Amino acid sequence: MWFLAVLPLAALFSAQADAGPSAASARALYVQPLGGCARQTPGVAEVVAALRAFYPIEVRVLACQELPRAAFYPPRKRYRAERLLAYLNQRMPKDGWRILGLTDVDISTTKGRYPDWGVMGLGELPGTATVISSFRCRKKARSAAHAIERLAKVAVHEIGHTLGLPHCPTRGCLMEDAMGKVVTTDRERDFCPRCRALARQQGFRITENPKAAWLQKR
Ligand SMILES: [Zn+2]
Ligand SMILES: [Zn+2]
Image (cartoon, rainbow, N blue to C red; front, side, top):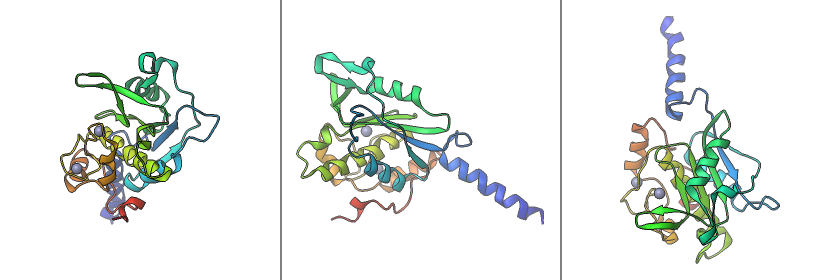
């Protein structure tokens, strides 16, 4: 009979390993709306739905916070993404696994020879904090819903970076490098098998056959 008692324990350990190295105390992916808190931050529900579809972890939304002044970059009147990541890591709840800041102001970071390059999102590679912005997702979007769909894909992409996934050369993979062009996200639908396997090697599971609305299109 002893082996019957051992089996559930083994199952418990493998479930924890799937969620990440600190899964015993960390249980939720937190979404932190940032800025313009007097009104609803666009895209929160869609971003949460996409994260739930791809990552087998609880997703919770925190109360909106105004953008930290320390992250403001006066020369371009926008916010530095890496400073927002530092701020978000400070705000991580005790049971947090990852935190994703969500804003509609323009955000930027240093990319190669560009000291201040506007981005759709930034995620630690690997790490715990990510930030995404709908500002660039709106460029040449067919509709508000189209822009929000792009934003949701960026959210899944940036959390992928925190799992240790680098950019992927496979066309249409969610880990493709946008190279500054938002239209890249329009051909992305799912992770490629190689990225899924890579996440698995790092001890994380990305849901197979995720149920995201954009997977049904085309
Ligand atoms: Zn990326
Ligand atoms: Zn890939």
